[in-house]
Structure formats: structure tokens, C-alpha cells
Length: 88
Image (cartoon, rainbow, N blue to C red; front, side, top):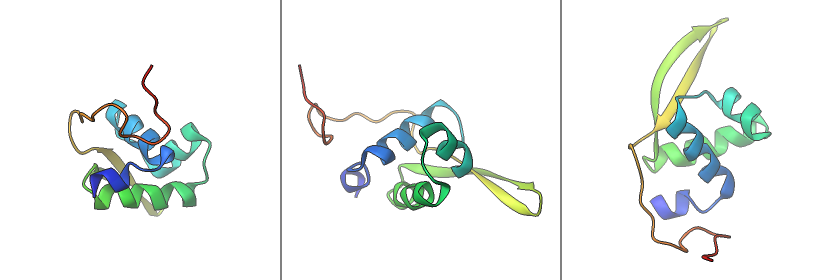
């Protein structure tokens, strides 16, 4: 399940951002230049695989903002496992 969740470049970028600090879908969408709806789809995939977790919710203007963070402090992958990655 973890490998499938990382098979998309946008999900890899989301995971990287959530290592840096907890972020909302809106914040990640702005950072990555993606639509919030598209980002939400990929966040759900990562959360279902346990790669990111819900860190906290905050009320804002009648809605709850959900902050996500990486599920672990680090991940170790063998070289060449991620699509598009080529070893020098």
C-alpha cells in the first residue's frame, strides 16, 4: 500500500511538505500550484496508506481546517524505487 501511495509525483511532494510542518490542503495546494480538489484526492490516498496523519483541526469561518503531517519522522526507500528517479 505504501509503494502504491507514493507512485504519483504530487503525493511524493505532499509527503515532503508534511515532513517540514503540518499543513492544510489549501496551504499545500498553494505551495504546489495544484487545485485544492486535486490535492484532497491525493491527501486521502496518503492518509489511507498511513503515510500522513491528521495532526489537528482548527475552526475557521464556520469550517474545520485539517492539518496533516507525515506519519513518521523519516522513510527510507531503496534507490530507483520511485517513478522517474534515475541514479547517476
